[in-house]
Amino acid sequence: MNRKTGFRFLIRIMERWKNTARSFGEVSNFRDTSIEEMESALAKYKGGEVMLSKEYWNEGIAVIYLNHPEKKNAMSGKMIVDLRKCVAELESFKDGKAVILTSKGDNFCSGGDLDFVRASGTPQGGFFMSTIMHNTLKRFRNLPLTSVSLVHGPTLGGGAELSVYSDFLLAADNVKLGFVHGKMGIMTPWGGTTRLRQLLGERKALELLLGSKVYSAEECLQFGLVSKVVNTTNRLDEALDYVRQLTIHHPSIVRAYKTVTSHYDEEQFEKSLVLERELFHPMWGSELNTAALNKNIKHLEQKK
Ligand SMILES: CCCC(=O)SCCNC(=O)CCNC(=O)[C@H](O)C(C)(C)COP(=O)(O)OP(=O)(O)OC[C@H]1O[C@@H](n2cnc3c(N)ncnc32)[C@H](O)[C@@H]1OP(=O)(O)O
Image 1: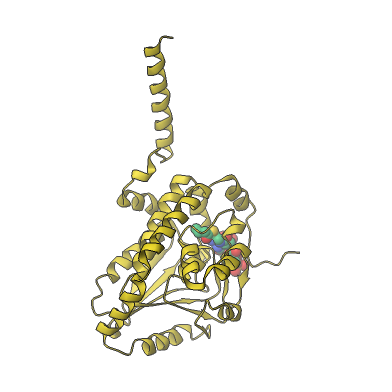
Image 2: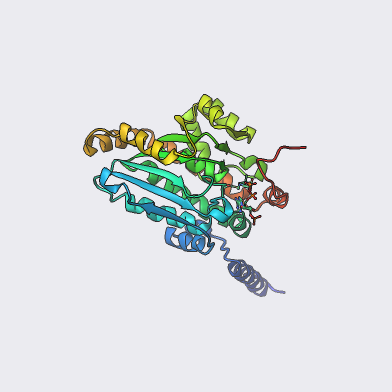
């Protein structure tokens, strides 16, 4: 084989590899993918919905509900895209004062939908998901609306990450909240490490993340993670009262305070998210992650 034929042979092998990779939806230069393409890749993983309720809109309060009851409100790819649409709509809620992030059914969110996790488990899948979620949650945090997460029942993995992106966290007395990612052979994909570091400081953030323990409402309160424990049955009414008391002033004042506090350390926050994304995406579908998924772990079961 002379040099020219050898070169052509190499090109053919590379082309074949690229085509094989494409047939699995994988491309070698996935970092160049546009946000729109990432969104449509995620939207293919169906199941559940995320809805924006305007029931209290006239009071300046929006409510976002996660709804995927048959899977304990686990987030599918489609739900990730839905959440993004809700945030986009809230960006033009001009007289709004507050948003409550909560869910229908008997818990807040059991994390990523494990069927979606398995099906999207490649570095590219991880990169797309964390890029989109980082962007959505950053935009959620930057809304000029005071945000409150209201959680109940199992709030695990990605569910715990979502819960801490609001300004305030209210936990129902039946909550079981845990950053269980380590047990799943991954680190936080949705910016949870960056957000916990910002909220609680280095030691407490590391304790929550490295321990992978599941905490009760009272324990979360003692940790400084939760602002108030509410009654599970009346939780939405209690959350609405809490929000109304927080936002007594004119929308222009409420929005101005929130705008300054959320943009305070934006540059540092962004840098930390980039690092988190870089470290996370090769873990998605890795050997460690696959081995953990194969164990079908139920995080609330006591070890015998
Ligand atoms: C993407 C960010 C990183 C992550 O979030 S990784 C995911 C972390 N989450 C998990 O691993 C959750 C594993 N599941 C559990 O621990 C338990 O199912 C959980 C949530 C404590 C609920 O326990 P129980 O109340 O006893 O209910 P159960 O186990 O019978 O569940 C009812 C049905 O819901 C399903 N489910 C729960 N969490 C899910 C999830 N994340 N993805 C997909 N399906 C999920 C569960 O398989 C069961 O379905 P089925 O009725 O057996 O068909």
